[in-house]
Length: 142
Image 1: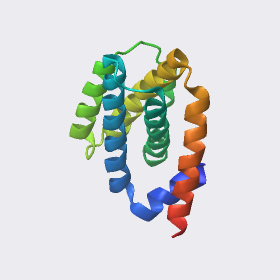
Image 2: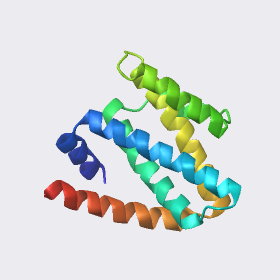
Image 3: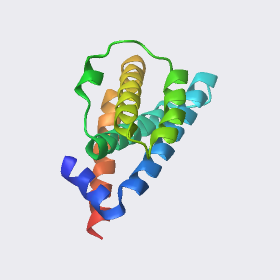
Image 4: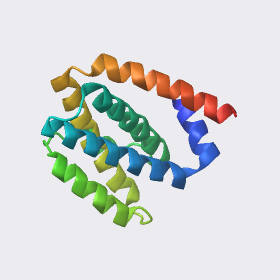
């Protein structure tokens, strides 16, 4: 999987992958809102979680991993994740981009894990991620 994600970064560039990451995070936020309002469905939510997990892996490749973030155990709300995403856009060209990105990645990963646990999405997300990575590999080869 890492090789495919790196190949996508190499083919389309870091800036494009950052744009895709922003789009995917926004789509997850939209699906969460629909689900909370009672008009969403688990399949769409699982698909967006899978997309976000894929782009988070790409962000980790682009910016590296901050080990201190992995040990941080506070609980955050989705609003704080959204605020962090907005703050990230201010930092993206700054020297602090790596730290800000690591923090956002950590927060979003915590929330996607909570979603998968709460809604029993693990099998769906795994299946969708594999399908999407296979499609991505095909696109890279073209």
